[in-house]
Image (tube, rainbow, N blue to C red; front, side):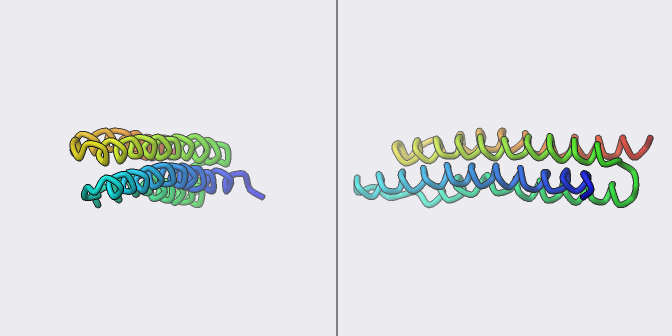
Length: 150
């Protein structure tokens, strides 16, 4: 077994695990908020489905990172250790972003269901957390490019 492939798998696996936890938390909260709305005879905001699905994008970032690592490995521009490091730490950071985005989305669903107000504010916070995953992906790509130059 080549350790470089562990890094590639970690990039996707850890990102996807974070997405699974994040969507799980956010989805449960959306369902609970809808239940409260229905019980109170209020209209249940459908937009909460966007909160529930927000952490899914980090799986895409993990897939992209995996492919960029694989490409650099196949081109011989990085060694197995760098592949492992970037995959593990990049995947973990992206996955944690998804996890905490899901928790923020869960709180957003709860607040929106209770008040019917603040949707834009909640999406801004969820978007800020998304930025952590995007920055991680971009900085990992820069690291891959820097390693390829040397």
